[in-house]
Length: 99
Image (cartoon, rainbow, N blue to C red; front, side):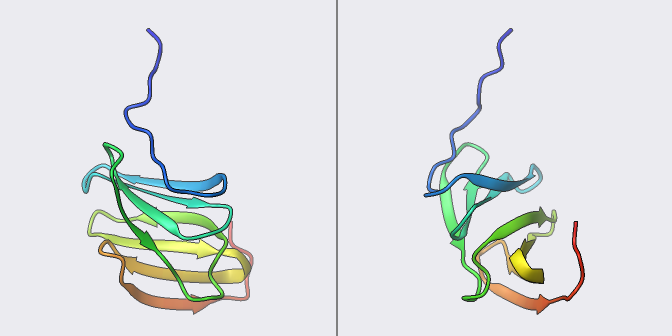
């Protein structure tokens, strides 16, 4: 009757501000107020950190596709595209408001 967590995800030093779950791949990607985004399995095992360039330290939004691409929107219009293996595939900056 009472909901209970399936897993506890650990590794962030600051509060979590964005999360994306991809059930098809069995992963959860979370971003904290400062620091890298972390990739966990749905059962809670930490797999890797997604670290962007120096200008990308404040993640705000995360989206993961079932093909294994992860798009992260950072503060000040910075976008990064990572592979599920943690490789930075592309980076771009836009001068528009993103919500």
